[in-house]
Length: 241
Ligand SMILES: *[C@@H]1O[C@H](CO)[C@@H](O)[C@H](O)[C@H]1NC(C)=O
Ligand SMILES: *[C@@H]1O[C@H](CO)[C@@H](O)[C@H](O)[C@H]1NC(C)=O
Ligand SMILES: *[C@@H]1O[C@H](CO)[C@@H](O)[C@H](O)[C@H]1NC(C)=O
Ligand SMILES: *[C@@H]1O[C@H](CO)[C@@H](O)[C@H](O)[C@H]1NC(C)=O
Ligand SMILES: *[C@@H]1O[C@H](CO)[C@@H](O)[C@H](O)[C@H]1NC(C)=O
Ligand SMILES: *[C@@H]1O[C@H](CO)[C@@H](O)[C@H](O)[C@H]1NC(C)=O
Ligand SMILES: *[C@@H]1O[C@H](CO)[C@@H](O)[C@H](O)[C@H]1NC(C)=O
Ligand SMILES: *[C@@H]1O[C@H](CO)[C@@H](O)[C@H](O)[C@H]1NC(C)=O
Ligand SMILES: *[C@@H]1O[C@H](CO)[C@@H](O)[C@H](O)[C@H]1NC(C)=O
Ligand SMILES: *[C@@H]1O[C@H](CO)[C@@H](O)[C@H](O)[C@H]1NC(C)=O
Ligand SMILES: *[C@@H]1O[C@H](CO)[C@@H](O)[C@H](O)[C@H]1NC(C)=O
Image (cartoon, rainbow, N blue to C red; front, top):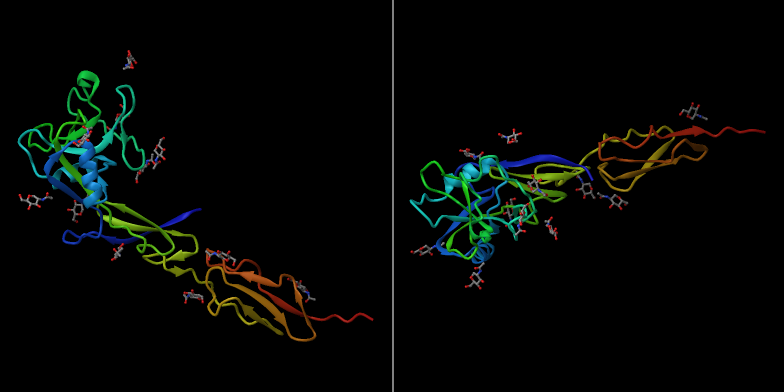
């Protein structure tokens, strides 16, 4: 299925109509930190690009030294790739890791912390043993079941958008696309499946006595807002004798 992108609302500084970041003020191992995020918010943070990384660092409190914050990327084995929780993304920026990281100390460091100090390594990542205690960095989603009526809700830091199914529009994909009203046929009338002539409405042609349907007998309002065929027409009955 194809989708149309529609912006619901940009997020203003004071509003919370987009995903938000949250953090703990107690330290936990990685597993506990993720559970804490899932209990109070949506999940541990997932970072999809450098802009999000920078924004997250601007939100999190600065720390002078370890412990810093756990983020939602792990691996099970030294020779495997790093995988983000959630959708299995493997995004790692060219400059995401701090110098000489990941260093696989003792080949047992399969979780990742983000440095929130003020030094050169601010915002860089470091691989750590998952059993270490660090603060949790979490996000809370703003999409819910009622955000988009006939579409999918999609979030970024500063925006929540509905991806509408074809045939629907509006900020919440709540409005069916409308077709231009059919003009009345000569010598007949339309019988439509709905009072309005919106997406998925089918109109049948009925001809007055003595007339017959010339060509197609019905048209449907398509997701493009066009009727599916040429104008319906009733023709005079040709008497042959
Ligand atoms: C989000 O919006 C705020 C306020 O408009 C802006 O200051 C900030 O830079 C934006 N962040 C991103 C990552 O676009
Ligand atoms: C942070 O600590 C304060 C008191 O020290 C406490 O009241 C608050 O609930 C804590 N917040 C979190 C998110 O743990
Ligand atoms: C990881 O891969 C390297 C070379 O690709 C190999 O030498 C090493 O034994 C592997 N480590 C493990 C634990 O499998
Ligand atoms: C992530 O990958 C695992 C294993 O390959 C799979 O079971 C899971 O469904 C994937 N999750 C998503 C959201 O794609
Ligand atoms: C994960 O989601 C992001 C954005 O939501 C997308 O850019 C990325 O391609 C997704 N990754 C996978 C493996 O689906
Ligand atoms: C990241 O590194 C790759 C390979 O070296 C390079 O092709 C790409 O342009 C780099 N991206 C950025 C944003 O620097
Ligand atoms: C995290 O702590 C819990 C509770 O103490 C423990 O059961 C779990 O094994 C720990 N996980 C790691 C990866 O250390
Ligand atoms: C669902 O999200 C929308 C914004 O996308 C918000 O206006 C609405 O209040 C939310 N509803 C619930 C039940 O949280
Ligand atoms: C058209 O009618 C249908 C069914 O009666 C209704 O669901 C839809 O909201 C109406 N559309 C408009 C634009 O009035
Ligand atoms: C369009 O109408 C068909 C037949 O009545 C129905 O099966 C389908 O679910 C409708 N599609 C939408 C998007 O309403
Ligand atoms: C039926 O319609 C076609 C064009 O759509 C027209 O050429 C033809 O003359 C019509 N037939 C009658 C009997 O009116």
